[in-house]
Length: 177
Ligand code: CO
Image: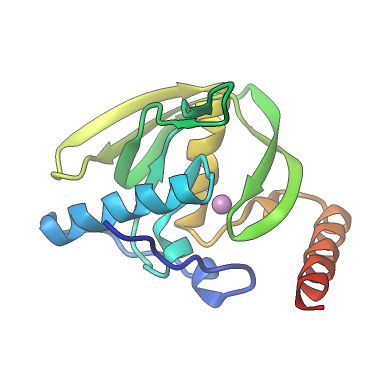
C-alpha cells in the first residue's frame, strides 16, 4: 500500500465532474486501499478520488474511527463506495462543523440532510445500499459532493466563503515565511 498525493484548493481537478467506474479489478482494489491509508494518515473522516488526482466516482469513509486516551488511532468501520448515488434525502436537516483535506485547517458549519440512503457498488462491483443519519450522513454527503466538483464551501454564503478562503491564503503565506 502507498500514500497518495493530496490535491488542494484551487486545483481544477476538484471542480471536474467525475467518471463512472466500470472495471472492477485488482488495480481498482489497490487504489481503494491506498485511498483508505491516505485518509487515515491525514486524519480524515472521508476521502474522494478527485482529492488524490483521480477523476472517478469513488469515495472511502470511516465515520467510527477514534483516538484512544493514549492518542493511538483506532480504525472504526472503513467503507469503500464506488459509483455512490443518493437515492433518498430527508427533508429534515442538521448543521455540522465540517472540514476538508483539500482545504486544510479550515472549518465551517454546513447544513445537510439529516438522513439519506445511498446506493453504491463495493470494491468487487456488488450493489449495496447504506442508510445513514447524522454524522455518517454528513460525511457521505460531503464526499459524494466531491464527485460532482462541489466543495463544502459552496454551501456557505458568499461572505462566509470569502472569509474562509482569505484565511486559507493567509495560512499558506505564513507557511512559506
Ligand atoms: Co472534502
